[in-house]
Image 1: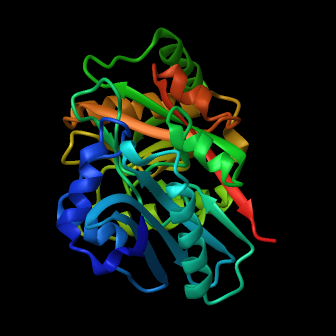
Image 2: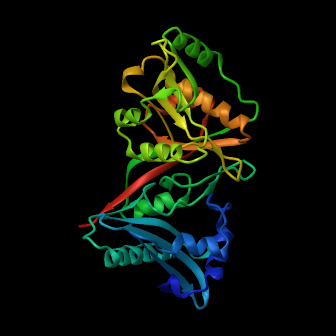
Image 3: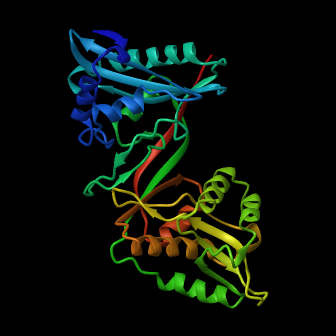
Length: 331
């Protein structure tokens, strides 16, 4: 067995090796040679990528990849995969160590740790088990049901957080009686859920300042700056009775991806209005709106201890995969 820089090999051979195990031993989607190349080899501003392959003669028997973001003291492990007939021969360990070494060499700062987490710039789409190709655009850690989880522990990586992936088929989606009751109760205070109207609503940008999430602010304000923005659901306070309404919560923008997946950038409620059940009302409204737009399903992930999981579960979402965020300190 020998290891080589994977960028020196034929990408069609590497993608064929990957696809042999995709959706069988792992839940990651299969990739065309072009997609494989863009994921693992193509670099862009601020992001460098490394990849290594293990060979038995001319046969590919293993592949591993990693990335580094400029200025970050962390190197990201994207994936380590070994042919099932060559496992338990320390090939995976050799591949991982080579990726760690390569990440140190390309980093523009001194690395202090390696991580397998959702912050990795390379998003690997995966298929929800038991569905007809229903997918999610990124893995948020190491799949805890696969052998790779124990492998990572054995080469020095340790869990520091857990992520749960949620899924729901949207066919026949309806508001639960509990959510309906919350929405009626909120109306007594002049609060309701509706679609954003820039001519009627105000304080949208101020909402994101309150939520302290610049990513959400950039996504939503960027959408609203378009000539034809995507639909955005908001929670509003119209209690003043002057025909205008203050934006006190949001979810969206709503769009349906090619796979039939309903997409949204985020969901949040102003800190002054979190006692009215608006979060769960917004989320159920989101599911209903995406269903009406033709979405077949929704997927998302959140931290094991994140209270937002209660919102998702209130709309009938179930955990379909658990992931570990893992880290190895550099000594």
